[in-house]
Image (tube, rainbow, N blue to C red; front, top):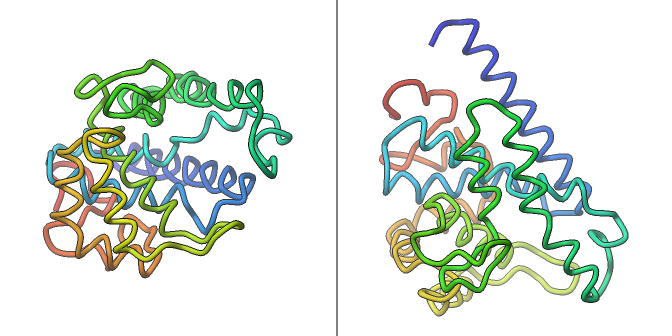
Length: 226
């Protein structure tokens, strides 16, 4: 990669992270949710591929998973309490809205598929397409588990963060229904590093908490990952 393209990629990365951060602020998410789950998703993805381009696509897909919520009205997105059926139907359009946004970015086709598929469930009961099993892109299957882990391990207005062991038990109990059993096995194999990252709220792709075989600095994705 030459210097000019490297600078452009870094600029694109900074812009994408800024957009994701802005969406987190709008939705009153805890900390930098989008960047954190993208970082954590890579921990699992490294168990399945060492291809730098594929890993980059998984990172962007996880980072931009909720970009479609930019098209959801505040009255629905920020509503306190349960959504009614019409509001829920509108909320369920955010993966498709996000897909249409990300597909406008050259070279982001695989990331766009993750954005479109991040609300699918392994048993086929998710949305928007009701995909089942291997029909769901790998990155989306890995992200779905990490997104749930982050939600359970973060404070919410209606409850405090759950202990990691409680979140772990919930994830294991949903193997084969909400989550791909292969993704659950990868989560269990990486439990030690994920436990540390959740405890420290690690969200930087180059964070020192990601060490050894798990390390994947995004700014070194040219060629083979370290």
